[in-house]
Amino acid sequence: MATDLLIVGAGFAGLCLLERARRMGWNTVLLEAADGVGGTWYHNRYPGARVDIQSLEYSFGFSEALQQEWQWSERYSAQPELLRYANHIADRFGLRDAIELNTRVDGAVFDEEQACWHVRSTDGRSWTTRFLAMATGPLSTPNRPSFKGLDRFAGPVLHTADWPREPVDFRDKHVAVIGTGSSGVQAIPILAREAQALTVFQRTPAYAVPARNGPLDPVFEQRVKADYPGFRARNRRMRVGFGAEYPPNREKAVEVDEARRQQMFEERWRYGGFSFLAAFSDVLTDPVANEMAAEFLRGKIREIVRDPRTAELLSPRHTVGCKRLCVDTGYYETFNRPNVELVDVGTQPIDEIVERGVVTGGRTYPCDVLVLATGFDAMTGTLTRLDVRGRGGRTIAQAWQDGPVNYLGLMVAGFPNLFNLVGPGSTSAFTTMTVAIEQHVDWIADCIAYLAEHGKRTIEPTPQAQTQWVQTVNEAADETLFLTCNSWYLGANVPGKPRVFMPYAAGFPTYAKQCADVAADGYRGCVLA
Ligand code: NAP
Image (cartoon, rainbow, N blue to C red; front, side, top):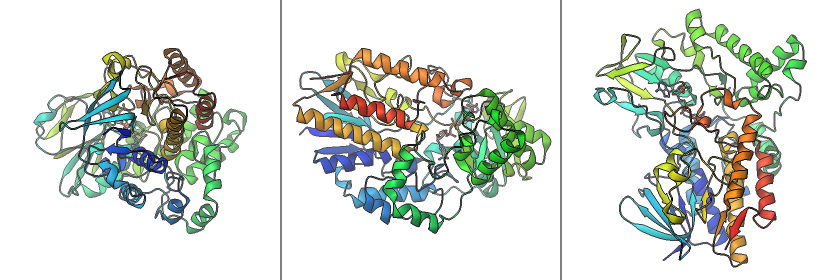
């Protein structure tokens, strides 16, 4: 029997869409490759994994009962609590009977005559569905660099995004970590405490701002819960979908005196997290203001790290915020420990991995366990690896060979009735994920309902509307400083990937209005048939 909707992925986006589909009364199935729900929070079990947006903001608002009953224990929840939250959603809303676990989708073909999708899994099963929603996540395919000799390494090789379920015992072990992005920055302080010795291989130093994590303040929680809808609405008006409690400072760093500048940076540093980037309104747009923020952070590194050579090596030179800012707990302090060594592989890349070590700059650094904190083939990597064929048998990988193209980030020309959630061309990771997901779920649900009401079977964007949207996304990026460094936003972390700025940088309110306007205009830019 054909389903109305088939969802791929049981992470936060898939669960949220499934809950909505249930309320709409659609016959829906959700396929998930893993043996549990939770997506990101299922796979990223590395020590120290926790959210970098405050829990009260990184949570769903679609159910008042859910947001009232759920109790976060910390300001920034750790991975086990986020995984419990995903499981709670699956149980509380009775979603499990629509979810097929251990089911890895490997392809889907659009049937032009019947106007439906035939979806198949690696174990040979197949499904037919009217609508197909890819809730496969923007950060879900681990990036595993092909280091020479990696397969010869004698000990365990662990990727942060594919971490074992069983606890890993690092006692008496010499651990090597490659990568100092958000994952590495969270894992390194814990690994340093647990392991006998830790060697960190750093290609590009990271800017990190303290999370100031701690137990959730019950007074703040009560205040939020007294008017959760208002709290959500205020956050949806923010560019990033969060932070309304501590709004951006409207002053410009370049227009105030040095004392005021230091005072504001210091205030945000003390408050913690991403609020630092909102210390002044020009930090992310004016290179001079950005350098002032950068120098403040480098000053903090020099204050914290006792060895001047290590402090210098840890000090980034690129634009602050151009790679995602890391939110840490004790990251720089870790390099004061006697059992931690920092190795620069920015000037001298890793030559090879040998049976018991990592070789760079003519020296072998011994290790028993290798941790790859090397990130993801972000935003496109999961979809382009699937054999998803639209009209004329064209695959997503072919359509996106020069970088992702789509309309509103949601639909691709030539792939009717296929929706992509929180991927390229939408604000995605530039917004707190739960806000981005709920907006996509609302839009998709309204769109499917509209088609039914108007007796239409399919929707797809026109190539012209798509081209225009890609241009809109590029123009938004051109107005920022995001193009000035090698980040996963640009695909620059994966050798050979087209260098295209993938998320939409115009801010959540602008994006949400553009999506709403398209819907209000009867899905302007789309062919409904
Ligand atoms: P990432 O930011 O892409 O960092 C990967 C690190 O590995 C970088 O330091 C990179 O160096 C290094 N690397 C990659 N290939 C290498 C190679 N061949 N040799 C040496 N070093 C190499 O990945 P991530 O840390 O997993 O984070 C990705 C995103 O996931 C984050 O930006 C964030 O959006 C999300 N995330 C969030 C949290 C959180 O706090 N909630 C935690 C983890 C992840 P280069 O910088 O030189 O490329």
